[in-house]
Image 1 (tube, one colour):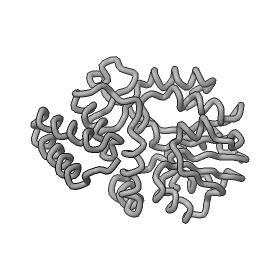
Image 2 (cartoon, helix red, strand yellow):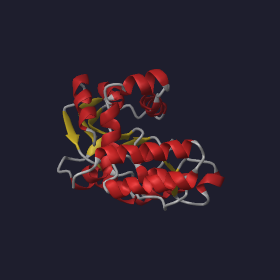
Image 3 (tube, rainbow, N blue to C red):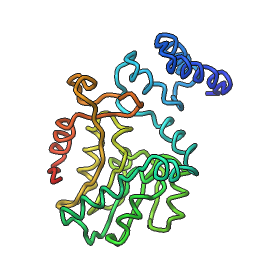
Length: 246
């Protein structure tokens, strides 16, 4: 399908303009037009519609949106996330692993949603073999330049867990992955498939206040990211045979 890029950009920008001005119904109208022009949703409009309360929560952020978002920001990713926003999830994960005495050595480690390789860099010394997966090709290119990975894949993380012919892993890390996944059922089924017995899964997640969650297992928050109820996270991991240690 050929996308009218100019018409899509105009509709998206008008949607943003109305949303920022508090004109909710006008914003929704333009976002719906975006979906008509671009059913694959490269702009993440479904997430915006859900955050505005117009649509039900999608099961996940569209693959087209995630790939586009991170491909566009790849070159400035570390500067924006670490330098400007103070992002330190990989360091926090390493700190937690050290506190739990889960610092290996691990024979095989999998970095899901690896981005530019910030998490791989944190645990490189603990692992004999590091494998990375990300949906954004530009991110994978930058991660390869760090030199800490043995294999890198361009793939959806859930599909990789469910379908990869790689051997299972002793350590799996998902730093800032859950905010782009709503329903975690398939992800956790894949996790059960690819994590060795006695292995460690380290991850980050977000939640929202009760008045935002409204009793839901997950929802799209005001910044177009998925928030999960802690009880839902616990239940999904328990179903996969994973016990929360920290």
